[in-house]
Length: 124
Image 1 (cartoon, helix red, strand yellow):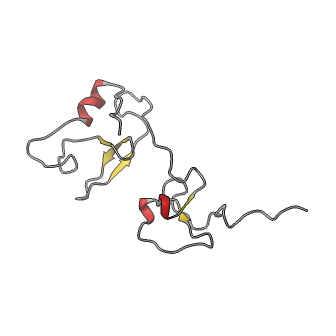
Image 2 (image 1 turned 45 degrees about the horizontal axis):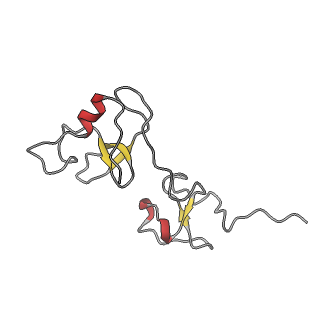
Image 3 (image 1 turned 180 degrees about the vertical axis):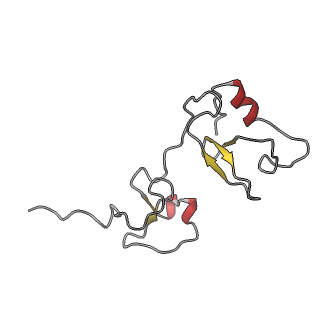
């Protein structure tokens, strides 16, 4: 993974803050922004006792565009076992193609058509 590029000193200072009292950035109330090596993006930590965070597309201090990882589904809105959306790892419902809705780019909407099975009728 690559190190993040910081658009301003405030983002660098806040994203690299380490605390001597807390074991992780998610348990420290002074940490306002986190960097995800896995997703290669910045986020706001969710204070629910876990390690969740919400991705942000703009710097909270200087408004610069921040890197956002493209969705693993390639923009088609559905995933299979090779590129599961973390939102649906436990959901074993399937459509005919064996896929589930992508939790990132189609927000897990089961009512949206799956391009692998809901193809338009061929014209003659």
